[in-house]
Image 1 (cartoon, rainbow, N blue to C red):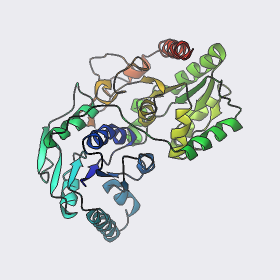
Image 2 (image 1 turned 180 degrees about the vertical axis):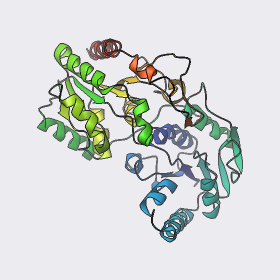
Image 3 (image 1 turned 120 degrees about the horizontal axis):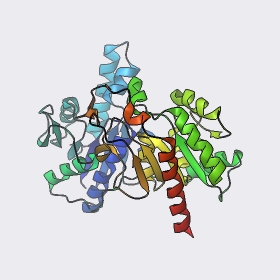
Image 4 (image 1 turned 60 degrees about the vertical axis):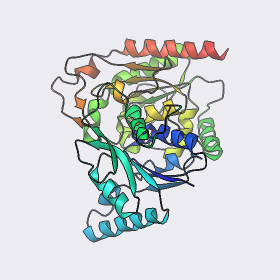
Length: 361
């Protein structure tokens, strides 16, 4: 039995962008054992996927954060993790981290074949590599799937995958039921945050929250939608701004990641910024209207492109200012976001809900 380890220590979107690699491996080697090495925050999202046999949810960043006051504890935690990986005796690692340290740790874990993306010649511990100098014009999923060429595997599908347990699905329905949601409701999700991976710079990914509120009000009044606000505990101030302008269901910061996933699966549509919740919705087959600012939607947008996933953006000469895996800063007062109007977003929401409604009849 072949045993493969996927390495991706980034956020929710990136974790899901690696799932087509898993699907391709399972299609080629149905009986193979697949492990996934990710960060602590996204580990729960992957544990329900029947194609993944084991999840190692502790990244370099997690170790540094958890044991920030003790170098010895960081080192101990790292070598414990490497030891756990070594026990599985993986035949090959697919390293999508763009970080030489994961290649070194895979070597220490006894994985002889280490294939992956070599960003600017930084990944010197890979045995087989595809050189990558940056990202432009192609989606991250395409770059990830390129790695399979190194072992002569052709992908049959390119869609990200997210699996929900029946327990989580039932829990989400019970939560929504407490707020008066019934199956016939037009349930629209709204996520005005920008995701955790950008930290303090998340504001540069956020369409003005007051505009989100205006769209929510129009969707409720004109379309009869029930609007549910979603996001992390850190994004509660944004939800409070929206909440002051209308009567909405506010679940921001009140759900576990698995509960959040299940709630998203119950939506007719999600309105959001570029971020992890967008990619969760796409992987779950939920319609989306997303606003993109500094990030190139061709690289990090909904994938595969579909009329059910509408991206709204402004083609300014300074955009995108997130290039080659780094944010260079904004020199144009966030015009790429501020110039997008409420009417532009609402018209797309209205059109997509009508399309969904007609398709279900």
